[in-house]
Image 1 (cartoon, rainbow, N blue to C red):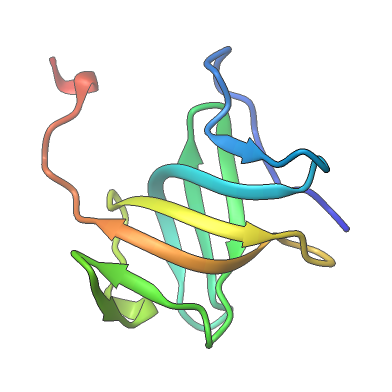
Image 2 (cartoon, rainbow, N blue to C red):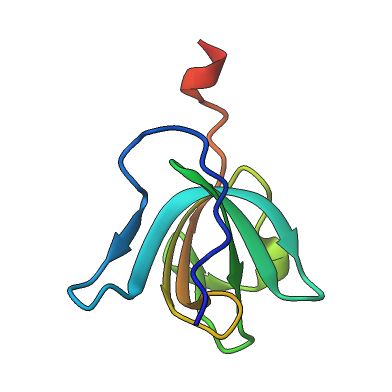
Length: 107
């Protein structure tokens, strides 16, 4: 049972939430890369880059409507709910908000 691969970028409060047992539950961040063949998504969270397994039965929603993994794009904002997996965390649901074009990094 491995935790998500994370590269620390800053000292912000973590964007991954833990339950009382210490297992992973959810993460919010920005899609960095989508691997449709391997069904993996790299997400930039506040404290690093995390990689998630997206199984075929995982529901992915955009504005409340179910979409396919191939519709996710880099820079989309996501909220991923997941459980621990053998190698990567396994997504149980993904909510997508497309890139709005606004970023505090552009100010």
